Image (tube, rainbow over the protein chains, first blue to last red):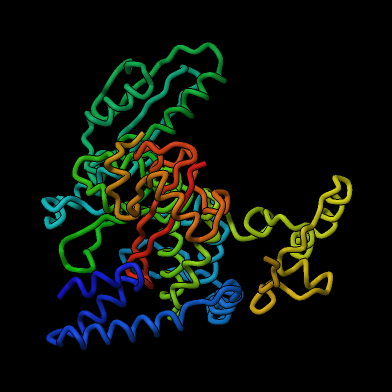
Length: 373
Length: 78
C-alpha cells in the first residue's frame, strides 16, 4: 500500500504526496495510483519552464504588494514585547544584510523542565541581562585625594537578582584590584596613580564593568509560548554563541534575527532559513500575501556563493560578471571606465547586456538556440 | 568554538551530508553541470567543519521547504 507512494518519492514533492495520501484514505490501490498519476501530470505542467524569468516574477510579486508597506517604524506602547522595526525599514535591513539589525533580537527557548515554570524562566531571564555597574551604583571621584568611591544601590541590585557581595566581588575581579576599604554598601579605591589621566582611565574602566549577564544582551522579557507549552525569553541584543552554551537552554531552538551572526555561528544554510523567515514575517506582519517561493528565490540568490550577499551595489548586482549589466545598475561611469582601462570583455550572455546592444534576450523563447550535431 | 552536535541539531540547520564520488558524478551528469556551476559553501562554514567535509566535496542538503515540504539541494565546498 505505502509502496505506491514510495514509488513517487523522487518525482513528486513531499507535500503533494502527503496531500494525495490524505485525500485518498480508504481508496483502492488502483484509484490511488490514478490520483498520483494525475497529480504528477499536473505538477509537471505547473513547474517553471526552462528560460522562464523567475527573477522578474519574484521581483514583481514582492514589489507590488510591497508598495503597501508602512514606510515608518511604529512603536507599540504598553506591550511587554520589544519594539521591532517593521515594514519597509526592516525589509530593507534584511536584503541589505546589515552587520547588526537596528533591533537585534534573540528568542531563547528553554529545556522542558524549566519552561513550564514561569518563575524559573523569569529568574533565568534576569540572569541573562547584562547589568552595567553604572546602573546599580554611583561612582564618586575625588581627584584631589586620588580616591574613587563606588556606592551601590541595594534596591537596584535586587531588581537584577544580585547581592551586594556578588557585585563587590565581581567589581574587584574585573578591576584586578582589591578595594582599600569597604563600608556598608560602598567600596573605596585608591589606586595610587600619579597622573590624573590614568585615574580618569581607571574610572572609565569602572563604568564599563558588567556585573552579570551575557555580553551584548541588554534586556530580556519573558513571553508565553504561542502553543501554550510554557514560556520563552525574548532578548534585546544578541549573543548566539554564549547563549547556546548555557545550561538550561534548549540549544536546538535559539533564534536570532541577526543574519550575519547566524551565518557565522550556524552556517550559510541556517542564514538562508533566517532570511526566508524574517522576510516572510515582515510581509505577513503587514498583511501582505506573497507566495513564499519568491522569497525563497531571493534567499537563494543571496546565499548561493557561500556567503550572504546583500542585494545591491556591494552585493548581487555589483558582482555580476557583465560590465554592461553593472553599468546599467549603478555607478555607470566607474564601471565603464575601469572596464576600458583594464580591457574587460563582455560576453553578452545576460539580459541587460543584450537589451543594451539590441539583441534578443536570453529569456523565454530567446534562450533556445540551434545546435549542430 | 561550538560543539558540532549543537550546530548540527539546531532547528535552523538542515541536514548536510557528504555524497560519494559516484553520486557526485551522477548528479553532474543528470543536470549537465560542471562543478563550478553548483552553489557553493565556504570551507570554513561551521557546518562544513562539523561534518569534516573537505574542499571539493559536494554536500547534499535536505531542506524543509515551505512549498515542497522537503527539498534536496547541493552545494560544493570551496
